[in-house]
View 1 (tube, chains in turn yellow, green):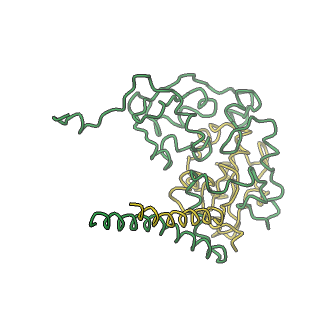
View 2 (cartoon, helix red, strand yellow):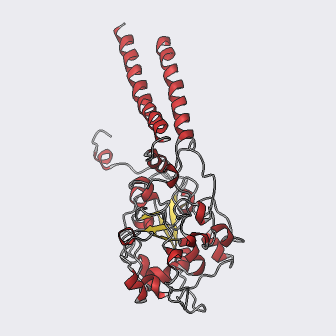
View 3 (spheres, helix red, strand yellow):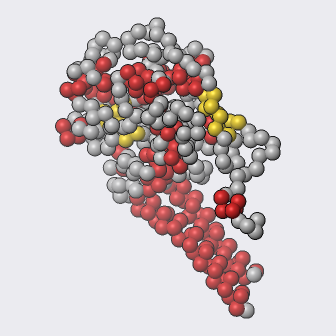
Length: 141
Length: 223
C-alpha cells in the first residue's frame, strides 16, 4: 500500500501544477455588461456592424413589461427578426426610437456598434456559457 | 501479491485518467496564446463554478473596453458607461452588480410602466408561491410581488408557467438551459451562481424532513 501512495503522489502534484497553469493562462472572454445582447440576424450580410442592445440601460428607464408585453419583443436573442423597415414603421425599437420618446434612427452608429462578425448571442447568459460556443475575443487577432 | 499488483495497476490507471485531460488542457492553452482562435475561452466561460479561475478584473466596463463594442465605431464612444448610470443604486454580488428589485423598493429607480405615460403604475400582486423541492436544498419561495413590479401577467402566464398549482414541472437543469425561470434568470434578471441560490431557495425544510424515497425503494418487498 505504501508503494501505491508514493507513486500517485507525483501524479497529484503534476495534476495540481497543470490545473493551476491552466487556470492562470486561460484567456478571458469579453467583459461586456450582463444582459447585453448582440443582434446579428441581417447586419453582417448588409455590410453594417451588428447591434448591441444594452438591457441595463433600458431597464433603468422602462420596466420589462413595456417591451416584452406591449411591444411584443420575444424573450429570445435574435428571435424578433427585426429589420430597419419594421423600425421605421414604428414596430419594435421604432416604437420609441422615433425622435419622440427616444432619439431616432439617424443615429446608426449608436445601435450598430458591435464588432463585425460577432454572432447573435446573449452576452454572459448561462445558456451561452453552457451550450453555445463563445465568440472569439478581438484581442486574439 | 496478486491483489497488491492489481491495486497498483488500478491506482496508476486512475491517476492517468485524472491527469491526462488536465495535461491536454495545458498544452492547448499554451498553443492558444499564440494562435488566433482561442478555443479554451469557451471552456473557461462554461466553468463559472471553478473558484481557481481568474475573477473578472473589470466590472461594468465602459462600452469601448467591454470587448463586444467596436472601437473603430464613433458611436461606441457616445454611449453611456454603466457605472455612470448605476450611481446611487443598491449593489449586489452578481449580474450587473446592481440590485434592481431593491432599487425599485427603495424608490431609487422608477422605470416607466407605460411607453409614454410616466404616471401609470404597475399592477402589483403580492402572493408568494412555495414550491417544495425534492432535494435537500431549502424550498423555493416564488414572490409574485417583485415579479409584477417589472412584468405583466401575460409575460409568464400561460406560455411559460401554467397558472395552476402542481401543473409546472421545474428543475434546475431546465432552468440552466434557459427554460421556465431560466427564460429571464441567467440572462437579464439575476444570474444563477453559487451566491444567488438562496434568493429562490429561501425557505428552510421542516425539522422532520426526510428525503423522499424512490419508487423502486418503496416497491422493494425486502425493504
